[in-house]
Amino acid sequence: MTRLAILVEQCLAPVPGGTGRYSRELAAALAATAPPGSDVTGWVARHPDTAAARIPGVSGPRSLPLARRPLVLAWQRGLGPAPRDADVVHAPTLLLPPRRGRALVVTVHDTVPWTHPETLTPRGVAWHRQMAGRAARSADRIVVPTRAVAEQLAEVLPAVADRLVVVGEGVSGDLAVPADAERRARRLGLPAGGYLLSLATLEPRKGLDVLLAALAGPDGPDLPLVVVGQPGWGGVDPRAEATRIGLPATRLLLLGRVSDADLAVVLARATTLAVPSRAEGFGLPVLEAMAAGVPVVSSDVPALVEVAAGATVVVPGGDSAALAAALVRVSGDGALRAALIDRGRRRAADFTWTGAAAALWCLYGELVG
Image: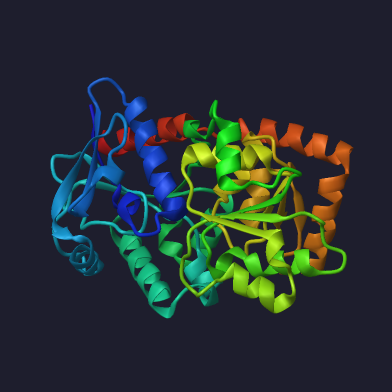
């Protein structure tokens, strides 16, 4: 019997992003696969409304006595309240509580603060490095999503090398295409003749500028671009960038944040997913697209290459001309598309949240004895 406390605070963040989805999907899978007698409780900071952190099968969320900002400041110093009534605490982001004698597991998603600090704010770099240092000192195990991140993290934080555990991610069961897909497609304004898709938070690390340059070039694909993702930091403005480089506004559809049901429709009708990221720790959109039968063109970031395992077309990061050529080829070559779809679906089947949860329950069991 293991009492697991999992922090689901990221579900309530202004921009939950990929780590918000990770927190939600992992918590739900852990609850669904809990060994007999074990239980999972979600924990958050004090909020007036915690509905977005309610997860099927997960108790709570229970609230800590501090609001988000003072809680973050306290935990930066290793102070403040921590989840109670638990044998294991799992922090699915670097917002980790004081250890307080309980087994502590922390997920570190990437090494961007060290490898690509220019893609974060100076404050963000400092915070992530500080909290990673705290994790290195206090966590019993550090979960990473890929071997690529494990190798990079062991280089920048050698003290954690013997505590790293690679556990992959999965595809949400909520991404099934709904029965009212046609109505949703019309409401969203999806182009009827196919489109390229970008699925990422709007921030410098995601390389949307490279993708727009690929479309604007003379040899770019003659397809519109649908962008799904909330604004992050860095002032990334796709419309302004498109205007600056001469890409017609009619080629661009910005949907912002969408529901899972809408996302399933957007994915199902996409011609190709483009992932020109400068850095990633896993690349969940790649997995989601492959599972949906959508060919993927990505940059050569090690984690993306590892996750795809030959099921995508890979181009050098930052090379808009190479990206344009690959998008044209994938969009127009039927045999290549069929091969990518087949390989992608088979590769995506290797990753499930149920499998991730099973691996973690084994890990928790080792820690509590």
